[in-house]
Length: 627
Image 1: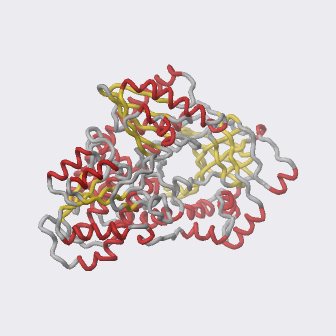
Image 2: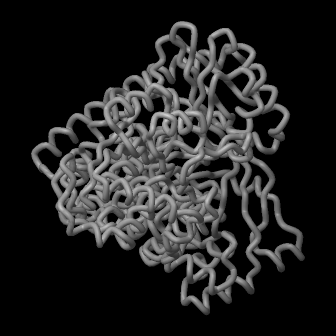
Image 3: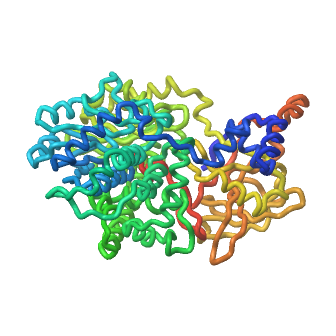
């Protein structure tokens, strides 16, 4: 289906572009990208390319209280339980904390909630069970910041609590009465850390501070076997969660992701190596180095799937095991769960699309179904939000209640919308872009109406037209390997640092050839006397502009590796006939060589759902770490 899109081309004064190109010794297209992304100052641009921002754990206000509480229980050999979550970030943050506590000789175990029976986060039933089995210190990972009553119950049951989390606090501003390690709440310079990065900072503080003085002690009676340990050995888990949880890849997050991807390429963890192997995604023994696409497409969906379809404990076991044979067995289990997840997702998507047609045009949708798997509806909500450019909440109904998962679009704060509809909900929480909820069946219709009314009120007509962002306007002669390799300096790509979109004016398409059993098409782009290979994914053999007709087309330019051959390749994002272009005024053309055309009918070709060479698509938000 063809949807209208608008080209979004930010200003880039030529003098600023020339300055960046000269002082950083980069090409003019890369300089355009930096200027359009707000990096016109050479110092800031160089810092972004270097990706080496780091802040000490002491930058968390109040972390000393958390450290003292944890170390007191380590010294006393008291039972410590790490309570995580069932997605990639929750599993990885739990693994990081368990590994450092084991290295310190602590008596540590863990608890991962079951999506179906426990729901998200800490609940009263879990607190009582942990108290009964002897837990004396509870450390939350990727949850807990909203668990005010549950933390109070734990303290009443003689359990100390340390909260490590990164989610938004409650709307009323109430915080748990416990030591808190949270990047936004504690004033950390990078407020958008994922939970695993928070856990890594906490582990670093434990190890580098009092940790070394504890390391020579005999382990507690209930402690696991010690293994050689350094906090930086877990940077592979930090990169995994940072990319999977779709946090902004700028500032320290960008540095952690880049360092972590290098660690992932050389990981000694048998579980990660087995997961890379079962996903045929390279790694130390593979043919390619893992990148952000490896994480987002190959690793994160498999780790998430086991928590969606079954229990997340298998994923945690995979990250903690030092037995290669056991790692292979568990990785195969995660791969089977991922195939099951895809089949379930397809069934729910078809059902939801039928409901969408019956509901008619709306600004925001709440759809519900009997028998929908609560672990998969978030992925389907993301698919629908991408396809229709509207916020969606999907609710899995069972008995007298329902569990929902929502996904947003740019310009719509989903958590704020749920806060505004809170009177219809039992509980809810999440982020601007993704959130979860529970409600009573009898409140479903009223919630749907309130959600649609809120979306109608806050979303303007312009916000409902998806934008096709352009980072640089280039000539055909620039679309080669040199530029493709240079653009890699901007990686890793993801939230707040998307893949580069290059606009080619007056391009012509030719020599189209079907690929992928007719699902995709290869073709040649002709521009400025140059030729470049290109591919369009997901649209069959149809292209939005006829062969030979001048077009304004945007592409990503990648280094494609296939069967030992490396070449530059364009991936089509958007195209419209050049005759639809709105010319800039003469003074605008002089001051700003980046005119903005009016909205036009266009095509957006998403990357493929299957491998093409070693390059893979970035998945929907819900396919990574977001609930």
